[in-house]
Amino acid sequence: MAATAATAVTAGRLLRLRAAGAEGHWRRLRGAGLPRGFLQPASADGDAAQRRQVAHFTFQPDPEPLEYGQTQKMNLFQAVTSALDNSLAKDPTAVIFGEDVAFGGVFRCTVGLRDKYGKDRVFNTPLCEQGIVGFGIGIAVTGATAIAEIQFADYIFPAFDQIVNEAAKYRYRSGDLFNCGSLTIRSPWGCVGHGALYHSQSPEAFFAHCPGIKVVIPRSPFQAKGLLLSCIEDKNPCIFFEPKILYRAAVEQVPIEPYNIPLSQAEVIQEGSDVTLVAWGTQVHVIREVASMAHEKLGVSCEVIDLRTIIPWDVDTVCKSVIKTGRLLVSHEAPLTGGFASEISSTVQEECFLNLEAPISRVCGYDTPFPHIFEPFYIPDKWKCYDALRKMINY
Image 1: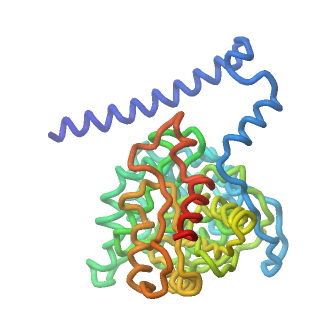
Image 2 (image 1 turned 90 degrees about the horizontal axis):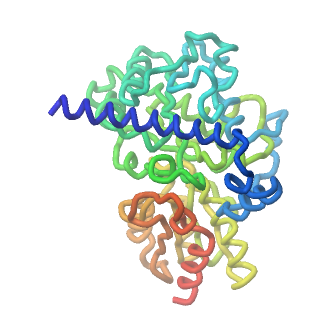
């Protein structure tokens, strides 16, 4: 059985390497003089227009924060880099490690950090997620600050045992004699438009069932930096999922100096009186657009909440809103069954039953593997959310 398992792991690694090689081959083909129409649209303008039409959301930047000093325009991956830079500068024990992070990572989130802080503090690991997290636990137990990167959230599952049975339980099983609370695991997360089965998943609900860890997902560059710094400084192991589709699509003013955004506090980003809309990550921008559509087309006032921390989540903020509006819609990209929307719905039903004017609505991904060419049909876009909202209003 052990041999079979080892063979399966090796085969999986080879498939991933082969996929990377195929991608490189495709790039070489694009530059090999093949007819332009065979590989891409006839013009760069047409290509850009096609991308804009495919996107299922419009990023809405927040107002420039003024309370943290000088700001700079950053996209989300640059905000992550800034947070990591601040952490390495502040904490001499902090180290960053993972697959390809030494040269900047596949999404460039660690670019320049090895040159600035040295190869002993920013370094590559083997292609072994279980080993990356296990190594991070060991570093954190010594009291140092461990910042691990899992290259895609889809590949976090080989590390599941280390996260759930080791990191999450370390303090509890030792009676607080030992802990690995200075461990933070970063990972690109969510749909990206073409990621398919192994590069578009949203696995936050798997970890929400595990006491002892925190799970955080930002919606923007400003949120990403403040929340990531809070995760790194928190005294519990944290998983920080970064919406990969926002790495370059989300741009706003972000403070240069370090700052913190509290964990386990949801944010009401738009007040309303008729319906409560709850989401996290990229989906926040979808429901913000739905709120605008509902106001324009139906005259409905929506309260929009970014949950930000999945576990422990902010029950009070959500329930307070639902008591006011009487209706709740929760939306996420992950499949419907067993998704975190189910936990929110159950809690709100228990706490706010007499205040509800309509059944709680969940608008989520389908109970299927994440598709490739059918991704636009899979994601819970604004039209699906708007239709669910309209049914709630007419209930």
